Image (tube, rainbow over all chains, first blue to last red):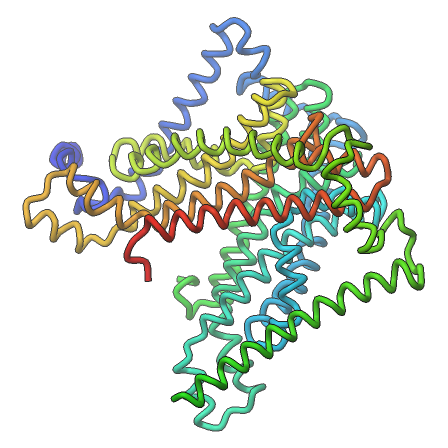
Length: 278
Length: 265
């Protein structure tokens, strides 16, 4: 009863300054309810609205297809094999892009000379979205796996570089000055001051670019492929099979969420001293 | 003082010079590799001279993809602005409403969290299957993608209002409406603009993607067609135009922000 009273009282106050915050239990409950409501409404719309079901299949069909393709192959492979291909592409492209991006970003953020040398070309390449690299990637790397790694790698590279630059530049001048005064060499300055203080920002970049990879993989799999979760979606689109598109989207979204959670756990372990790690 | 200022200025000039030299060296290497030593086939990397020539010619020549460069740019811009403006008109108020109203927060947010975990590019097939390959489906793609980014940022902007400011306003007897319009929204404006910028960038990338999948005009279509025709020079022209237009769009938005968001730094 106490909670319902509270809610009544809070009606007059905006949510951001009300004293009683929504508890975890409450928010899980509401999340569950609203989720259930949407699924039920969706299914009802499919059942009772003519034509709706033809354009947009219901949750039952989607789940049924998903269970079906766990066992029966679509194209050449079953669902989990497709997912495996996608993960492999994301990981290889992501790791290459992240390593180059963080190194470039740190160099540009730390040294004015490196910045002056790299930034003209970087600034030209940066605003080009990863998808626009698809035709060039095909010309350079052919239709195989390499062009997929390149596309994922490019999008990761840009995001990681930008965040590392910002991290290195945000290093407190006072700290740098103090270290210099105490006789730190330039190398020590970098490894003891600049690098640790930019780590939270670097992790932010790693996190964002990992989520972006889950979207870019669709662009990458537009390059001729016969496997992968992105391919499932494209195949669904080309054959007019919305159910398959939705299955693919759910698979990629859930994968993205899991990857983000894993990354967050790594971050919490690696930089437990920082505000982002808390 | 004066001396150190002069030194700083000299340094700045020095770095700008280095940048210019570095870029020139980049172009010279590119030229050497392609035109002088012919290390790569022009089909995979044309020379910078050829790219520049194609760029200038593309303003008047319609071949081989059916439209001039400016026609492609205008077609893409029209789609992106339609979807994006619709996305911001819906996204900003809804985000503010979700953050302001407890019930909306509790019920809409979970659904929205679900909705936003869909990768941006994923909207393309969904919209194409619903609306077919036409302008409506592309505008809907842009709408969905920009809407998500804009809503999230407006929401977190309001949520991050400094409670002290709210308490002060309340102590002075501000009504709920005043709290919202005088305190919360102005202090959330920088966040809202971040959302508008992110939304615009993503919208621009998505329209290129949508045009690559199905279209008969637009920059995305241009680079896709020229791959099929093996015209690498025109692909590079298209890519550079995509980057350039994207930069101009964010620049314009930045100008707006500088003008209308007060008290930032």
